[in-house]
Image (cartoon, rainbow, N blue to C red; front, side):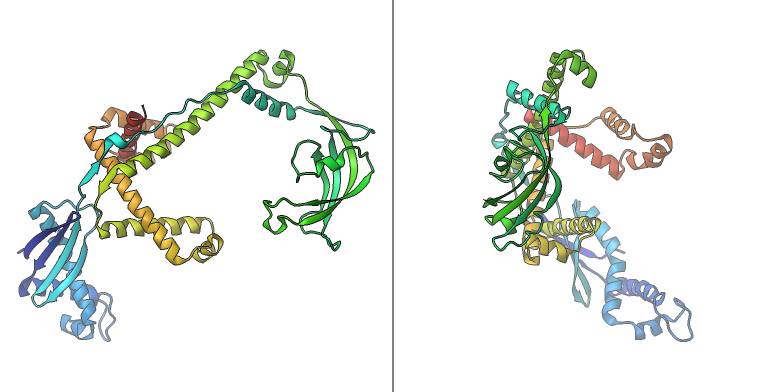
Length: 424
C-alpha cells in the first residue's frame, strides 16, 4: 500500500512533494518505530527489545515516537515519489511534518536547475613567455655563488667582501632591541640583505675593528614593532673574506655540472626556465578561465542547495584546521575574523562553487565532451603505476566502472578536456 502523493513544482528547480498516510499505514510504521525505540529503552523486568509495545508507548516521548515513525516511512515514500513522478534530486531532500492526523509529510526535492553559459564571453588572453639573456645570466650568477671561493684577508673591507660580524642593536635609551643581537652573522657588502645603510657602514673595516652607527628601520619592515624605529648598531668584525666567483668555462661546467660545455648549461637553464614560466602561465590561464566561466554562468540556485554546499565547506574547513592542530577560535583570533565573517565568506564561496560547477557541467554537455573506456583505463593505470601489486589489488575495486572514485576521475578527465579545448 502506498500513500497518497501529490507534487508541486516550484521555482529554482524545487519540487514540493506531499505524502498523506492512512491510519493503517501510520499504525504499521508506528509499530516498527516502537520496536526500534524498545531496543534502546531499559524497562524494569524486561530485556531491551522484549517489553510489550504498549508499555514502550507509555514510556516513550511522543515527539520522539512521531519522529521515528516518520523515519520508518521516509525511505518508501521517497522511492515512490522519485519513481512515480520521475524526480532527479541532486541532494538529499528536506522532510517536514505538516499534520499528524492524518499524518502528512512534505518532502522538498532539489533538481539540477536550468543553467545557461554565455560561451562567447569565455576568453582568456595568452601571454607569450620570453626568456631573455639577462634572465639566464641572473640564474648563472646565482649558480656561481654556490661555488664561490672565500679567502681571509687582512686589508680593509670593500664591496663584495664577506664579513663575519657580532651585532647588537640598541634603542635611544641604550637598551637592547629584542631580535637585533647576532653572533657570527655573515654579511656580504653590496648584497642589500640588511636594512638600507648598514652594509655601507662596513666598508673600510678590518678584522678586530669595532664600530657604532645610528640607523632607522624602514617604515615598511617585516617586524612591524620595529618599523620606523631609530636604532644604534654596535658591530665587531670577526673576519674579512675576499669572495671570488669561478669563471664559467667549459672545464668548470664539465667538472661541476657534468655537461659538455657552457653553452649546454645555458641551454639547460633556458629550457628549465621556459618550462617553469609555461607552467606558471598555464596555472594563471586556468585560474582566469574558471573566473570567466563563473561570470558567464547564469543559474538560480535554491537556498537548500547553497545550504548543503555551505555545510560541506564548513566540514572541510574544520577538518583542515584539525589537521593543523588549530581550533576555530584560534583561527579567528589569528585571522582577525568573527564567526559572522566566516559564515558570510563560506556562503559566498558556496554560491560561487555551485555556479562554477554547474557552468562547467553545462559546457561539457553543450560541447558533448566524453571520456572513453580506453581513456579511463589509461588514466587509472597511470594513477596506480607507482604502487606495488598488493596496493593495486587493494584499490582496484574503488576504481571499478561505476564506483565513486571512477566517476570522480572521469569527471576530472572531462574537465581537463574542456579546459584544453577552451584554452587552445
